[in-house]
Amino acid sequence: MKNTIRRGLCLLLLLAMTAAMAACGPKNTNTDADEKTMVYAVEAGSAGEDVAKEKGWTVNSVQDQAAALMEVAAGTSDAAVIDLLMAGAMIGPDTSYPNLTYTDSLTHTIIPRKMEKVEDYLAHTEMDAAEIITREEALLDIMTGKVNQKTRHNIRNDNISNTILDENNLTIRPCTMDEIRHIKKFLGKESEHKLKNAFYVKNIVTEACFYDYCSKNQISDKDIHYLYHGSRNENWWNILIQGLSLRPKKSVVRTGAMFGHGLYFAPRAKKSIGYTSLNGSNWAGGSSSTGFLAVYKVAYKNPFNVYRHTPEYKLFTKENVHRLGADAIFASKDQGMLVNDEVVVYDDKQATIRYLIELA
Image 1 (tube, rainbow, N blue to C red):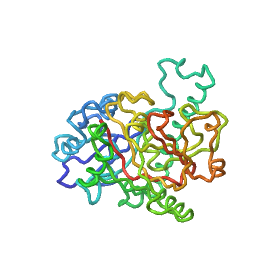
Image 2 (cartoon, rainbow, N blue to C red):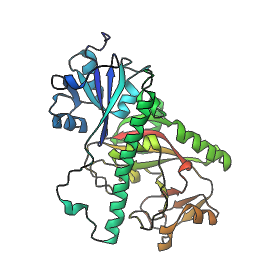
Image 3 (spheres, rainbow, N blue to C red):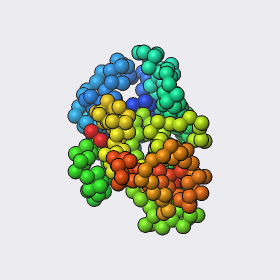
Image 4 (cartoon, helix red, strand yellow):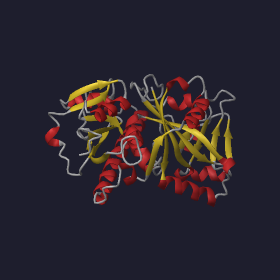
């Protein structure tokens, strides 16, 4: 094991639901045998700290995730528990910690799930049923992402140069100072103080689909818009590796889906922050000290402008929006229908991620 990292493990916590493990040194490092004697550096108050304590591990609580990695590098901790995004940007070849590499993954118990009150999981109205379907589909997405990730890892584990990002067709790096300045500018004074970290993200698969859509539909650079999308912490790893996806149309009308079966974005960060896990988020009921907000490239050139809502708008699909001669809905706040503008597209190839912002 290389001397630059005295005791070579880095445990990566994936947001709130799943975790991935990375290690420096040989592929055959035995982590199971060492768990009880190791010291884990964790960010104080984080989900990673909670997991480590649940497992009965000895923890060294530090200020943030960067400090946790420094503890491992200094040899004062055996491992660091950090989120997968930070790991993708900071460990492996050509990073600050080239001697740490991804080795394995672990998952919090999802099934069976813990239910303090089973009553909270039951439908009492038709609208409750719609919310439950949305919640359970999100859970299935998370599980699908984990299965796909494990499958890709097993297929490619003969190549020791593969990182977890390589396996999932992802490029993630910390944003440059210029990128951060632009992000802060567009977050605006009302939200820029929430910025904790920012990452450049590229999904090779969704990016290729996006530009294929642009080519086939004569979308030029001026028709590519940078918009916000918020989601709960536990959803993000699957979103990163799978992309935002539209399922086949369901018969149940979803709460919050004012404009039907589409992907929803906002020009204003404050709107999308309301859908994150951040404490106080109004739509998601967030209670976490951190949340994640993405900036997406969204392609459209012929939006159908909506100023007043009518019930039939909840039935919008790709087909009937196209019959209007449109490739998106622009829902305007100008006449009081909404507090913030919204943009809805109806083809998942119309969007690809560019930045992921960690909020605190």
